[in-house]
Length: 591
Image 1 (cartoon, rainbow, N blue to C red):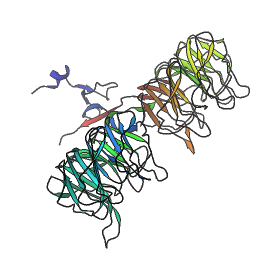
Image 2: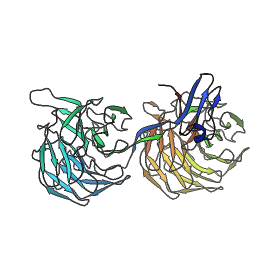
Image 3: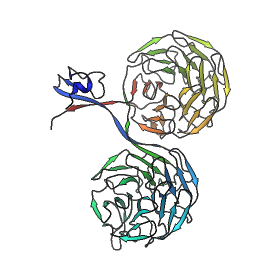
Image 4: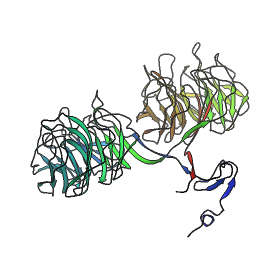
């Protein structure tokens, strides 16, 4: 048997305290606590935003055996729809419609070989999808809606439960349906799996003579009969599901409207991270580790929203850094987590104070020439640019930092406050949004000498977050009338609207690039938020919160290593450092 030294190249070391930077997989002995310990990366399971559907709806049939990057959604209500859409992992495309518009029905199969059956009002219709079009085939023996479906393609499927015929089960052999052994519990239900290995879970039970109720009942199908197994933690109906067979799956959303997500491991359910948008009558596809949730109803509106579920995602965490010398907010910033620069802002009053951060402490440096707040900045600790700001009067002044002092250079073309910026150093920058007032979409490009107006943002706003460089930037959040979640990407020529933040907010902090960014904090009425979200170039995912909710921070760094300093309310000097991945230290115990 291999020994620890043979694997890692060293013996287990003794320490009086836990080591500062242990290697993943390293084991050590803590002499003070007299315990053996090791470290591993902290991971989470989470939902992130996917591409919106073209048509908002609820009660769709989905290709249950589809995947997160190859899914199919068909039909829906209200009113009944025949629309079919195909998902490629980022966007939905309209394809050929069902022959009969309907909702509250079930589906089976994949994006290219699917089956849709049943529907409201208690129809028996079955249609087969060949990747291009739908064809009507033989009907169910019993028409019904609110049914569960399972199956790997359009030649092998299972239909179970439904309104008025809540225990009825039928199997499809590619040609016709055959009645088989019933469910144990009468209900409208949902589920997943194959014709020989499936799960039916949750639903709404309303047999004649019994009071109607939501149920948490879960039953497992072995190809011959159903067996009751452990219940969902939360009873509900009209849920979304994903899974491959009766040993693993996912249940999410449902009515009463919820975002609750539960994982099935073949024996029991465990609660996990909620959907970002609570909803019922939604559809799903994929597996317990890589799933898709789309459409549905949030209690007020039909939805186009799509969310993608992934497990084992390395997660970052915020930790406490050294306090600033001057508590303040609304200034400009530049640099990295271990080499940052903060300048200007409001204590109050407005200040020109400049401080540098070395990863542990802040040091006061030469002030800006013009004290101001509500300004923007970009660059590094030794080559930075600060611009705009003020309210009365507005300021267009631009100052360049050379690592020692600030020099006034050419002004912005449009004086404004509440703007954001991006850029690599003091020779290349992008200034966007703000207010003079009113709110503006104006964007200006700095070439090291002067500012030039370029194409505007699509959405005028002030107090957005920003990340990136002059040729590839990201603008997110801000305020229009209220806080917004709108995100736009800059390609060096023009802005394009992309997927929104999960939490609308004004005055967030920002770090990173146009494809790997971090948004944190801000104001989202009725108050301040600590929410942190990661941008992967396509969508935002919620991750670990700041320790202190705040807005108008000084921010710097990357998606994996960021800094949040200062901010309000009240005005603070507190600094937090974001590190991804974060790690968990585990004590080894005998059993």
